[in-house]
Amino acid sequence: MQAAIILFPGSNREQDVHDALKRATGKEPLRVWHRDSDLPKADLIVIPGGFSYGDYLRCGAMAAHSPIMREVKARAETGTPVLGICNGFQIVTEAGLLPGVLLVNRTLRFHCKDVHLRVETSQSVYTRRYNAGQVIRVPVAHHDGNYFADKDTLDRLEGEGLVAFRYCRSDGEIDDDANANGSARAIAGILNEKRNVLGLMPHPEDATDPLLGSTDGQGFFASLAEALA
Amino acid sequence: MVKARVQIMPKSGVLDPQGKAIAHALASLGFSGVGEVRQGKVIDLELSETDPGKAKRAVEAMCEKLLANTLIESYRIEVQG
Image 1: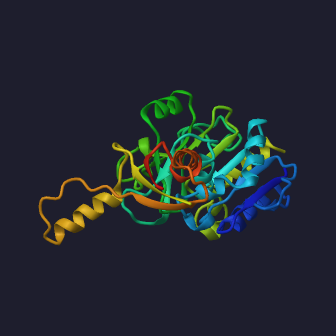
Image 2 (image 1 turned 90 degrees about the vertical axis):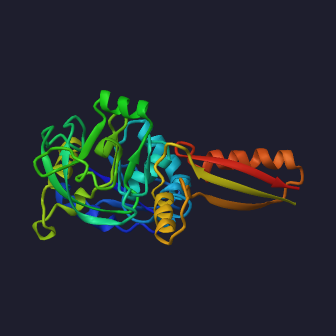
Image 3 (image 1 turned 60 degrees about the vertical axis):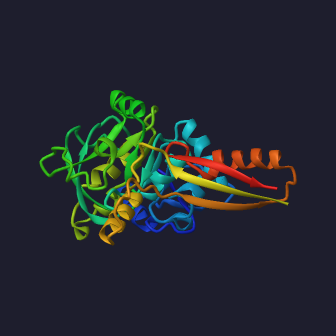
């Protein structure tokens, strides 16, 4: 499986996702600078976390309209998996690859801590090695992770099984405290209709090594390695 | 040259925690009688276009494409000839 990681000025989690992908697949991911005119052939495109363009205007807005994103959108339409993590989630929503938007956390604080997530579906290349309902522990690190969409969109996401992850307690129950950033319906990650684009705020790549305190994110990368082998 | 000012505000119904924090801070400073507070932003643009109508349409396109996220924000454009 050949992954390509897109870099914008201000991306800063590219090494983390690079290492997680390399450990899972044994293959060196490519790095693609946003100004590169050619997006190489890839089985997976990753937009990593960070603060692209300093979060100017709105988080992800500048990167979403950069030329390389036109190519990323075209690949997504032909079915190539596109993964947006954290700032990458903000970028793919601003680019229109996923519905909704990430607002400032309701606490107005930057949240940097481990959270529990309930895997809501195993029906995707990202989650096939998990069971629906499984609880995993992974870190979050964001100031704008408060998922917002209108009621019809939220109903459609739930009705079509496109909610991939929700914030939950360690026992898997959803409650207001566990949903610290205030996301609509405790949504932490969503899929598009074709299920090839995933955006999520938490960082599974930072839960793939015992040294990092959790290995619960390994299943995420093992899923990709298996599905896209 | 035409100058345009774009006012961008969170839509009603969209949570505005910054506005809420400002309201709390005002109350704690003793300013009573402040109801809802909403925080937005202002963007000033200088345009080479000289026709105010054309300038406004151009700025509308900019708002729809980049300056505002119309899921959560509304915008108002003022053109000063």
